[in-house]
Image: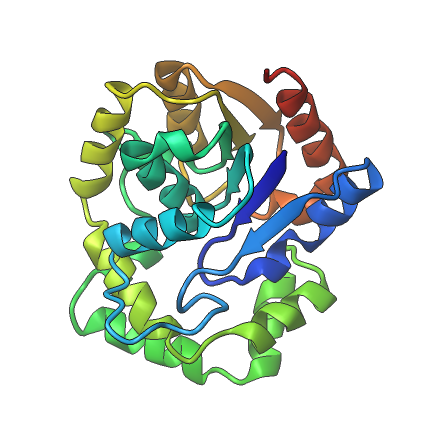
Length: 250
């Protein structure tokens, strides 16, 4: 089996470091980390950076991976996983994702996302973010609970196209787009799934994610009191939860 990991925004594959170390310590060696265009990887010419563009990118990447594939997504990586489930669920054996509330009919985008979705305001916000000195961005990540080495890796690996990709992605995902995706998933024949439930995630409305898990027939792995970057704060527990889920698959 190949375990494929897709990170979120504004991140790179470095965010998975502690979790991958924990998985390898438990004997999981066949892992692949994907970096989305603009988020740790260059943005190709003509790449629209819309939600559909990223689903197309993920589809192409998975088509090149030896399967069966167990797909894991975090933040917008989870959004890409849900998008893939809507069009090519046949590519994977299973999925695991946090932020399942994103595709709940009642989900409301968090304040920063709404700023990015607002013309002119979004441009000002991403310009300020990109122009912030590297050491200040590292300190910001550390203040959010990410270790200093990983924070430095995230900052150093950011692609110059990040800001424009953030705007295109979030504006393409303004409601009702995500709610419509969720409704389509409820009518789809999906592979086995696991919702990674960090109960103090400030961005994903965890209660909606738990409700969505029930509607999708997915299992739930609860990380009580943990926030958005659970793969850093409780890597060992998360690794155990993923391995337990994978062990139930046939």
